[in-house]
Image (cartoon, rainbow over all chains, first blue to last red; front, side, top):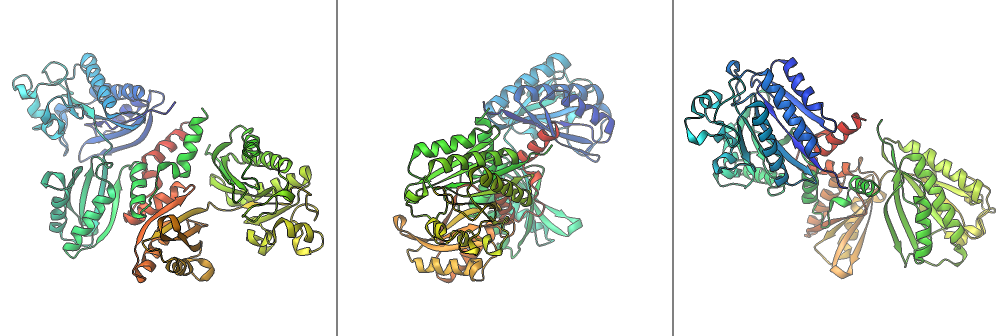
Length: 306
Length: 306
């Protein structure tokens, strides 16, 4: 039977107290079959991000245990940090990796949301592919004004009603957003110039919100330590808008300003398929299929033998 | 414990009788843990090529069983085919894939050679990384004059003495060549021209034998069915001479002749690392490491959990 793999990347509003973060991680990893792929904490943001993966039910169970632990440990009324947030367990996306559809991940998010409300009394918003209101596709709309505004508005402003649960913020844990989305590639392209205005103009040209490529979010930022400008990109669907198409677009735009591309960087993880698509594109493979990759052939021979 | 994987690509002098080829395949697959990745038979060449992989000892055992079966079924005195050959089991290379060195594959070849001689009385030559005489690095030197010449010269011409066994050809199975080599990528680049002379000139420029890139063998051929010329390439070590370096060299040379590259093709399999290196090259990744690939991270998380 083909393997089913879902990824979950929950964000928790604690980035300083290592003991609390360890406890949240331990709660998730109590579920057998769940693999921790990454953990990152940022003290300025006062936020931590876990990345774990496994079979759908195991991942959903681990997500609930981690949320439960965060709700018990984090008091948002005392939380200060640079990153916007509305909950102790702020946002919990499910991402299909292998043998699972986005729709199945929406079901996982709905199930998790129901469990969070019924057992923890934390109201839940559904976002991205799981959104039930158009504007809630974007996390920014749900998080507007953050916890402090939400506490006041929930129950009085109808537009802030949660999707699951009563419109009452949890006194210390606020609310939680869960949902399903495709794999997001965080990808930065560095320019051989310290002129951040050029990076900003290129970002504007390539991003969806100002008429650019469909699955691209981008902004121009300055890398002070390296004295160069960077186009910082989130690629929300690399199968629709591939990495190499974005790279080539930035190279073309940079040339217009007489600037060259110094290099690019992946932040976090990139799916194998994105790498394979890019190699096939640049090498102009006429016949590329993942089955041509030795290790993929081995994996399918192995699973056929089960 | 990290996985150990060796590939074996034995060539047998039978490409027409499906029953015999099936029997040889079945002999190899009688060893548990051995995975068949590919099988190809060519009637003109009257030759078949198996590709299987698994742990070193299992692969060596499977190789012996396949050779044993081929020796019992194939009579070289009656064999006709376009491809040069000296044995029923003509050549049996071992290729390190994962967690195994080339040196360990040389040991496997030596062990297989000793077993073939002691149990089957087929004399054995060692080639490529396992060669004990300089000129036997090249298979062509060992196979000169083919079975018909070898039968006459073995035992009389010292330079044709086998590396393992007495200098007496097996009456029907001839001799066998075994050895170890790196993974070979068969890679073709098609030109937007029917002028095969251009493909031949480009091949000459890029190949090692005429002063080109170290790990490249290349020739220019005509693809009559598509009316275009092709640079047909064997890349004997893609870590030393990467696929993208060869591709870019061919593009550059083609431009000199006013010709463009129509596309490229992989024949057989390509290791994942070659794909990753090419994507990283073209996208100018500053920080690419295989651990950035989601599936690689998953695999290492899985093996750490064992």
